[in-house]
Length: 88
Image 1 (tube, rainbow, N blue to C red):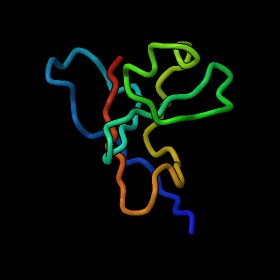
Image 2 (image 1 turned 90 degrees about the horizontal axis):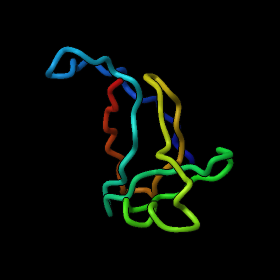
Image 3 (image 1 turned 135 degrees about the horizontal axis):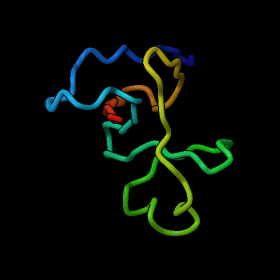
Image 4 (image 1 turned 45 degrees about the vertical axis):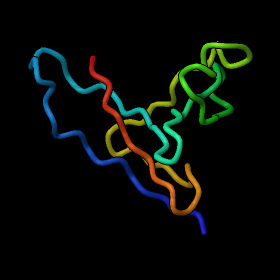
């Protein structure tokens, strides 16, 4: 069964108070890999930071989620995703 959920809106201010929240990035709990997407946005993959620096993934960027963005089936049952804020 595919589960769908939404990201929670960010309610935390950045400690320096100068920058605003921009988006979320996802890190998989089981192995610490980040979700990346190709330049066209047509493929996604869980990669380590080191893997994302070498071909063929060196042109990929971290996948982003907006506040309240919908996501589904990003990890296997029993695993979890940590969302990390990116600031402007």
